Length: 341
Image (cartoon, rainbow, N blue to C red; front, side, top):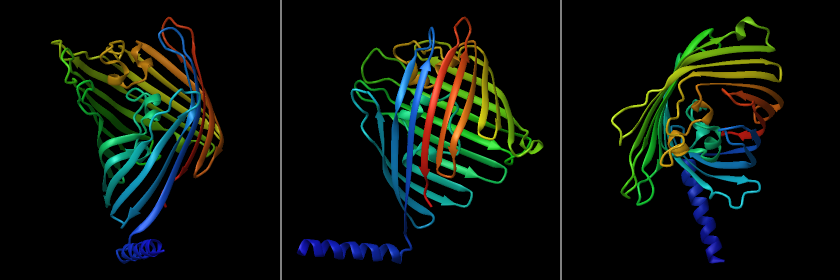
């Protein structure tokens, strides 16, 4: 009885202290469910991912400073074992146009998600947090951010690896002409074991965007985007750099709940170490389709439910690569996102 009374008094005192300092509590919850069936051919391996991800969060804030804690749990149906839950814990500071985050941060806190030419969507689903620091700027004509994602620490068998990312967007929402950039530097160092080498990669995707929405009825939308996709890579055991690059373009058109999107790449294969057992996807982290001289992905998406919290959609993609049958993909996604208020 004394322990219960002591606990109640401590809780009451803690609550009074928080109220005295004008501290607020809030909660957020993100749920993602997907069925992703990839009927790929030739060098593109087929795969089916069927599962869900749950990310609850609690936040305490005094307005400028905040501390957020939570967990990210993934359940892939039919898997023999499930990944351990990922801890969410980060400090945030926001004042005016600048803000910063430090800790284990959900990717949804970023201003913009990396395109698939820099981050494969499978990796993004199974690695939903940034481990490091995020700095963001948000103005009327410019949004920009920089972050460090620490991927692994060096051990006897594990490589030191991290990624530095910058992205930004210049222009007003709905403006006919705007533009932006994505830049990612990946450092894939050695483990303490002998016989390994360091890999490095710099990726850049500057682009311009044309938005025709203000010229069309409200039920129609049309956007086009074109830019350069360049990779600069090297294995330090060699005395040369690989510098593949090409043109990356996209088109998105929608009518009510129906959306058509297309991505086209033409240039040199961007992932020269994809089949290297030392590097592979752990180093490149990009969609393997970009390891072709050209590819085109066209998808038709229908959204059954969409509101401020829920989005439920079905998408059918077809992917074309040289000297290969058509690659098909069916994707069903359900997202529930109750964000902080």
